Length: 215
Ligand code: HEC
Image 1 (cartoon, rainbow, N blue to C red):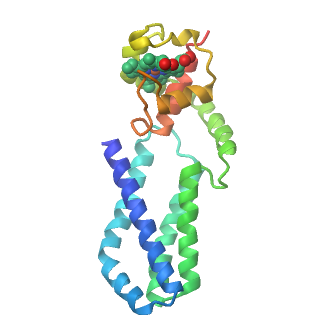
Image 2 (tube, helix red, strand yellow):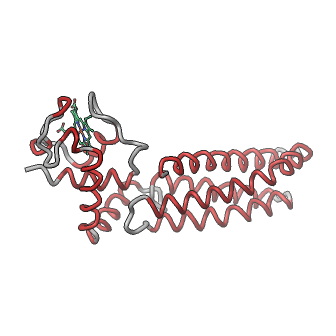
Image 3 (cartoon, rainbow, N blue to C red):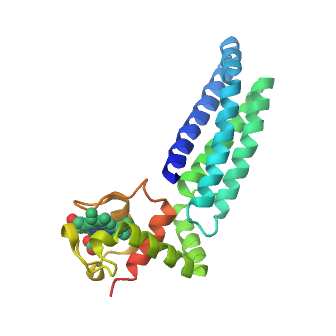
């Protein structure tokens, strides 16, 4: 369900971006007739896309396992929700400045999504997120443990000491947090990659949990 929603969300976001981009470019390059044609044709599909985008986005935020959704999410939600009517009005009135503003808002929210920070500051959010998880450490650990038992214990054992498929003992691992996250995302040899299967927050939780095995 989560993965399905994630794929739908990614797809509609790309369609949304493309649609706004194409129309803004047509408007800016004074291709009025073509612009109006495209605008009319995309009116209904775009309404569906906008709705799907917001609904799947909110679903993902609520189900990603985040105990607390970061500020970046609310800023992004506001930017997207503002961008939708701004673009609609801009295209209806053929207002170039408004269209550009709408497009910038959309690109801005896309940037926020990718970096999970309102200021596109990846490092900053890592620190912010880790202080945030510190407050709710208990729940993050519980979540990490349940993800671990579901996905990882077959090979690594419930205590990190099993060695199935050539897996090393996690209790003897010397990897730092970043490398553990990296290993979970990308896998290695017999270890499957979990990027796309687990959300970023889930990977963070299970990585924090796995770190507790290290002696
Ligand atoms: C199919 C078996 C399998 C599953 C499932 C699996 N792993 Fe692994 N894991 C491995 C193998 C094999 C390696 C060694 C890869 C290598 O270095 O060649 C490994 C390596 C690792 C390492 C690096 C240890 C080190 O010090 O090199 C970490 C951390 C790790 N796994 C965590 C996890 C987590 C967390 C999960 C669940 C989300 C998981 N693994 C699921 C097989 C598995």
